[in-house]
Length: 160
Image 1 (cartoon, rainbow, N blue to C red):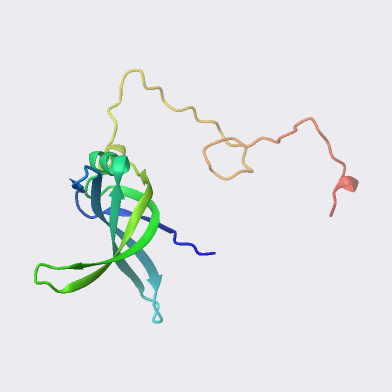
Image 2 (image 1 turned 60 degrees about the vertical axis):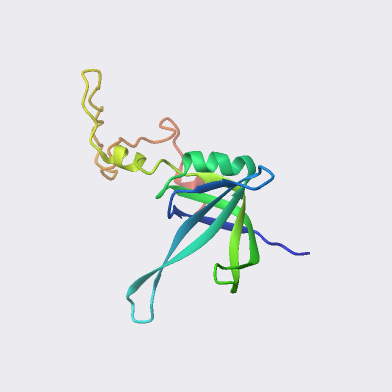
């Protein structure tokens, strides 16, 4: 049994290019960048970026080109495919690509900026309720009470 499955979670490196084959089949291409952080032998933190070429076919290509833009977070599920082609100088080249079978879109690239921006206070916004602490719990912002306050377990019933 053989398996050719790839999962890549990263950011789109440029806006998608949507084309059609001579038979009318839509095809889109995009680049996806992934980062890997690690600590080297000297203890310094390092980060390596990998760039992946992705090919998307059919309706998925049309949908992806409509919603994905440069910087979008995307999860690509697909398979690896290596093909050869002749470049403009007639030299034979090989390229390995991910042929997408499923794509999940992340949040909009500017959604994080909108979430980080302070919200305008409205008259309908109520102040949060602050519950005083009893003294035994950490300052987590909420009171902690026994789960079963009326249950008294004798020490002889404790397992340890």
